[in-house]
Image (cartoon, rainbow, N blue to C red; front, side, top):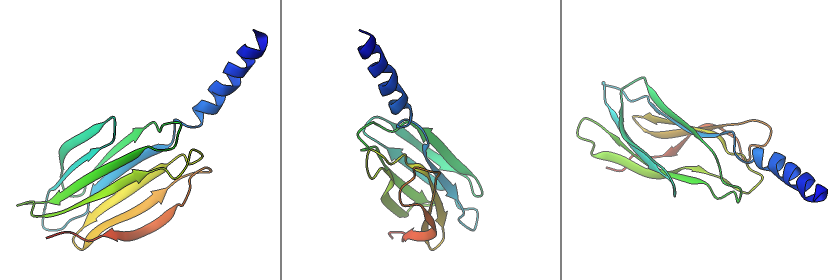
Length: 136
């Protein structure tokens, strides 16, 4: 029984490392006072729909699963008529050792930009770069 208790304690400590440090931020850096419509979803959660005013952002932190398969998909649309849009993978783990980090998305006039922030166990951190064009 003592060995089983030790196993559960160690297993619990290992699990703590797999449920922290993940999130997405979506910022509206559009011009001409355009609003940004967003909706994101995973297997278990739905974020939005929300309207993000210019110069503001939406941030959500969440737990990742043990298997390293956590994924969020998002749709962004820029106002006022919301004809320009993009659907994309806003967050994805690469393995069970990846802790995710913060995926920082910026909606700009010429496209959607990504910067992946993270700490010690974040795989594939990236500097700000254009990831997607708007679909018309």
